[in-house]
Amino acid sequence: MFRAIGKYFRALGYLVTGRIDRARKTLSTNPHVVQATYDRVVREKKARIQQYKDAVAKMIAQQEKKAYKLKTLTDETNKLEKLKEGAAAKARILVKQLRAQGQSMEQIKQNTDYLKCMTAFNDFTSSGKEKTVYIADLETDVAEIGASIDNHKVQLQSLLREIDNIKQESSQAVADMITAKEEEEIADMISGISKDRTNEELAELRELRQETKARARVARELAGTDTQSQEAEFLEYARTSESNDEFDQLIGLAEEADTAAPEQSEFDQAVQSPKLPEG
Image (cartoon, rainbow, N blue to C red; front, side, top):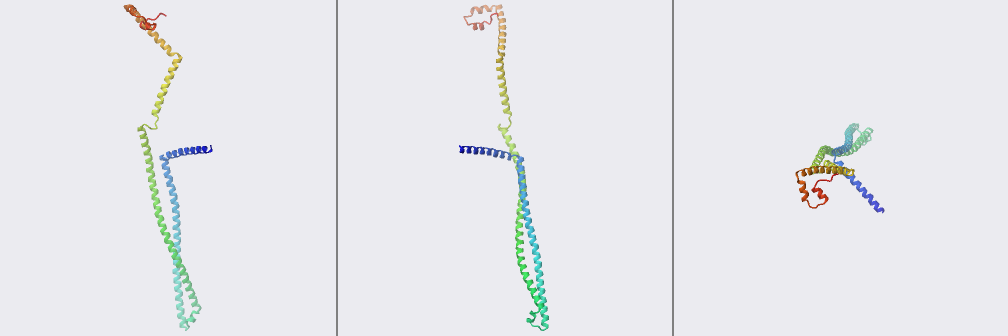
């Protein structure tokens, strides 16, 4: 029993779903609905494209930030190179001066100013190498981000063209829907299956007319109108017949008819001799 009830409700659900689906399809072919659907699709695509643009803009900002950092590091590296060259140049002058004073290389290397120049040179060299590695990484990042941005720009242009195509398609689709509906209505009219109820209404009116006449006839018979009409008709025939009999008697035809007449029933006699008994 429960399985039967379950099947019943499933069948009912299928029926409702089918009707809803048919109604949805019918509504979806309405030109206004078609236009609104295309407009919604365009809005949604524009919203996604805007999100895409925002993401690309962030990538561009990141690229610009790295490019600025790359320029800064390059300037710093160039400065370190100059500082390193300056430290070496100062050390060369100092060595020349100390040698002129007769100091040996061992003594010169112990000189405080020489040690400062050497320490500065080494620091500049070490910092320059670190920055050079960082610069190489930044150059790779900037190049990769730039290539990715270029690809995304191509994709954006393709999406924007797609939106333009959808707009054109929407106009064509609405026109096709209107044309198809007009053609369908014309075809229905030609084939006699138009939704116009003119013929059906005429048939109903004719049927009502016959029914009304039949009811009127029944009403007359029940009211005795037809009986009175028949009696009046019979009296008129009797009056006419009496006049004819009188004329026949005047010219001598009535006696000949009475003599020649065979035995007949009362009705036959009445028909043959239209003379009616006096009332």
